[in-house]
Length: 391
Image (cartoon, rainbow, N blue to C red):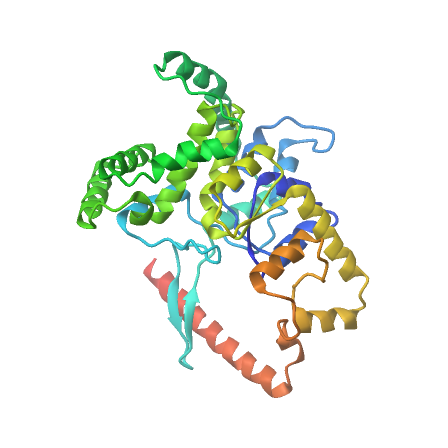
């Protein structure tokens, strides 16, 4: 399995459907599909037809078709923030995606594992891929676009500038913005940290009961800094704080869609690689990323996936099997290829023996593997039958 990748809509748009570039994306990476990406695809239902896409349905369907049946859809960031504030440990290694569904199942041979139900949005995405959109989805798409247009960030900024007694200077240097933000959010003064915590709970519109539980937990923990008390919630707060500070100091533009683009960065803790073609989002990424996270632009992603595709097309069937057996989906050696670079960094140097060894199982090994799979599938069937009886 390759590095975990978080792509935005611009990367998906850049990849060719006819040339199957999107399939290679899912081969080379474990793709994190954030809810905001799905909402942006739905939002395209409200766009006007064009020469390339004669209807809004064909536009939305073309993007939905690039969501190959792989990767995983994490829960909405707000739900994860609430869990984080209440004490749930949210994985932030870049190699895990939190899942809010699933059961442990044990087979007759004693082996056990998690059975994760299909995400509810998967069925909806399949409908979109077939060009099936409901009237309510059309209406929601229209409301979604109207809501973005109604934000009018430029007017909001001008109003704040005129009414605020404190005049914020314009910032053009990312290090200046970094100093402004991080000298505040990492200020360990307890009263200051308390204010930050309350501010973020207000942003989430947290119910009073959850606010009370969060603050009680914070006090029982010894009033620690926000970043240690609820790491994932703090990450999202940091993204929000950077956006507001960058917006008010004109480091970020007042493009209304920026407030949507920002939401991609709430899911950064679940990936090692981020991909976008949006210049402003690229600037934002470098301010809030972890030290080991990498950016691949939409152009580089398309170019380098095409190189990998070209390499595979030149191999005959025996050569393809040999490569898959030895290296799996590890990209061919090419120091200039950004995908090869991130594989080398996160998976280590390419070496023989790291591929799909099942391609050359002996008859005995194949039989043993088949028996194990059949035992697991039987356990899953029984589990599903029990669940259906209780519905």
